Length: 83
Image (cartoon, rainbow, N blue to C red; front, side):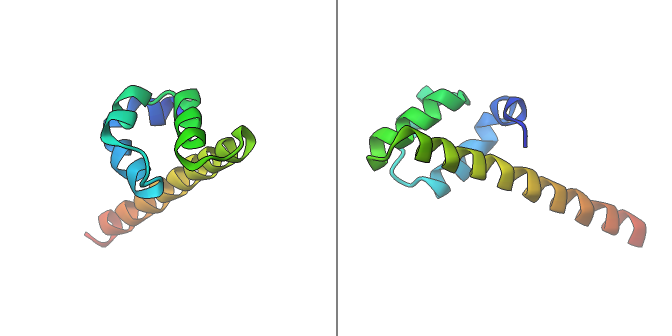
């Protein structure tokens, strides 16, 4: 999923981010407000990891969201065809 979509849907994405990075607080997620660089920084801070590792995790997570959305769209198409 491209980051513009993540940012635009941040309220929905916060729960998924919290599931992925449980050390992030609700306040962290509010401050991040869909900003990729803020998310990377907070992950670095909370998990004590290097910036490149935090960036890799965020990229992987974003990519998995895109795959999840594609799978959901395919399921919806199948349901419509079956109707």
